[in-house]
Amino acid sequence: MDDNKIKNSVSNNESQEKRSPEELLADILGSLEEYTTEKAEAIMSSKHKLLSILKTHRPIKIGNYHYGLSANLGKDRALIVFEYDNKRMVRQYYKNRDKYLWRCRICERRYYKYHLGSSYFRLYLVNGLVFVPNGHDCPPLDYEIVMQYQKYLEEGNLQLARRMVQLVDFTYGKSSFENIVNALNFSSLSFQKQSNFNEKENKIVSKTSLNLKRKLNDTDCVSSSSDKATVKKIKIGEKSCVNDEPALSINHLEKKENEAAAIPSTTFSFEKPSILTIKNICNKLNIKYCKEAVNFWQEIKFKEINILSKNFKTQIFKTKNLYKILSNFFTGKFCDYEQIYYAINQALCNKLVDEGKMTAAEIDSLWSSYAVTEQQFEFITEFLPCRILIFDANNKEPSRKYGKWKNKNINILTLVLSLLNRKYYSVVVDL
Image (cartoon, rainbow, N blue to C red; front, side):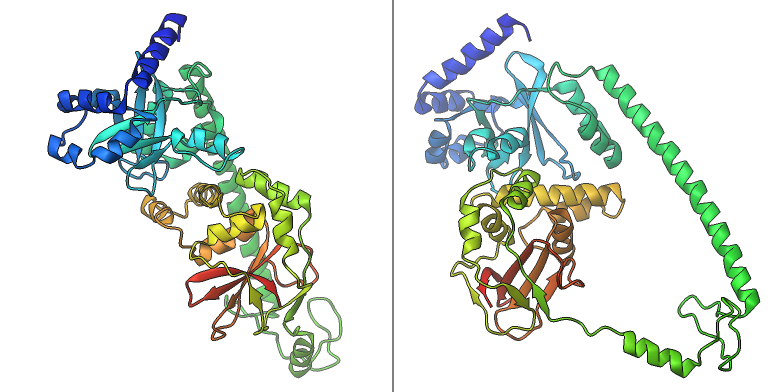
């Protein structure tokens, strides 16, 4: 973008900002068909809200934006907005859970590192009217690159779309479109070669396994049943055909197995996380580390965990939103729950898409609410990493465990919660 275009863009923005919201709304009503298909009556019914929006945002005419797909193939879940006087540059917004707000994820990710959130990096869509922020700090994107990404999404090629996000800088002027296509083609070719290699490797392994199975069947030591291997009855003192060791009777084997069966542990050690551990998790979640997190962990009094405990104390605060609880664990406040929700579920979506385990409809439902499924709980324990224990506050059901609980002395971040009426989460502070 040359200096003249930058000056024009700045002057247009400044002229919009200098005018009062009432003047801007009057202009919209004077040429309403250029902004929306809604009638003037519908616009005036939202007059108070529109005047408030126009204090920080400016209206966009219909020809200066269009809809696109979200990363999980949600139709009309993205808005691509052209910059002033240069349609090679765009900003990209995604539909929020709020009825009117759409968010710029680039701004959101950068802003969350230092602040608690702001509507300034969000787009409003009210009665068909589109409003973008007057001040937008993040750099504009290259329209040609954005549309190539949209093309992959329209074709349903999520794998290539994901690879494009990983390899390409969408910022205007940072990447050459030809170089991008070459890089993606090379990456796709490498992936194809790796897949072919894996396929050949799997065939070799399968063939080897089949030969081994035949040999085992020939020795008549194990059953060919895929469900359960059985041991051939051999008299005590005879030699085993596998290792020439004296064979054991079936009864003796069963006795040994019963003796070796470990009694599940109900008591586990507990250690509060270090500041470094909390900082590492904050970095992974793209949120700012706060000293309040240390103060929060000081409220937790127990030093070991009995998963059968019926007598536990919790914080007064209760919520249906698990991500607010996670925000409390890692920042000592509830403010960062949206970014935590986004970071965890985006990572889960990427994992499931890369593994080919999830359809577009399933991905879309994953983002539809703050409710947490069993699959999401398990992923949280892998992603952070941590282990989670949830007591039933009504003492009607056994506690639920997620993550690594086999080793009772393992040193891993442990989050202990209570769930009231299967709805309201709270943090357990004493056992």
